[in-house]
Length: 196
Ligand code: SAH
Image (cartoon, rainbow, N blue to C red; front, side, top):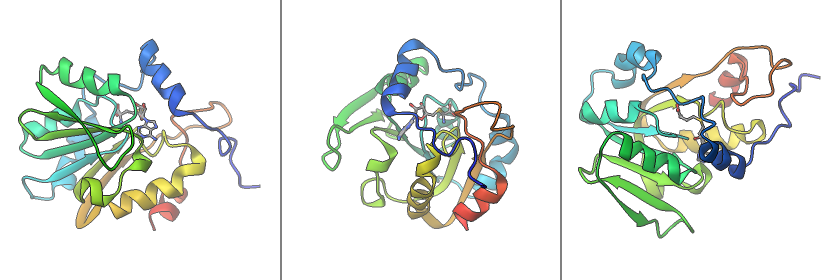
């Protein structure tokens, strides 16, 4: 049929919050991703002081790396615990404020101002709230989005990109009959049709 075994699968926000609560976060990597190191030059493309977006950011340590390099980092994550853990694990002071445009949304911002993490669903964001980005680090994001929401997710991401922005995407390849995901299997042909 062409419809993969995972197309109907849905992981709710509540289930993600539970994973964080239970410490069931095998996706988090303390070491930082080797592919970001490897392709950093592609992301930056000789530019400095970029605005870089981390969709579905969790407490990714790469946010700290890029901020330390002088870039300005924006992330979005449904788990407040993840965001608080991020700041406390890096001993970064932060402040917290409501986001008027998003009901229940909160912004956690490092006191130094270069890391801004939104606690809400990514689908609550728009360029009028967060602006546009010069670069995107998508690891554990497209592959974590429910398969039925992929097109919506990608359209949103495209709307958040500046003209000359670069987008690094990490996917995983495996037999989708053997695991239910997430991470979901997103074949390269689908990446191409989603992003055009
Ligand atoms: N990118 C991170 C985390 C990957 S796991 C890393 O590399 O470590 C996916 C994360 O997305 C989880 O932390 C989950 O809580 C969050 N999430 C799931 N659905 C979301 C949504 N609709 N909006 C924002 N965050 C979401």
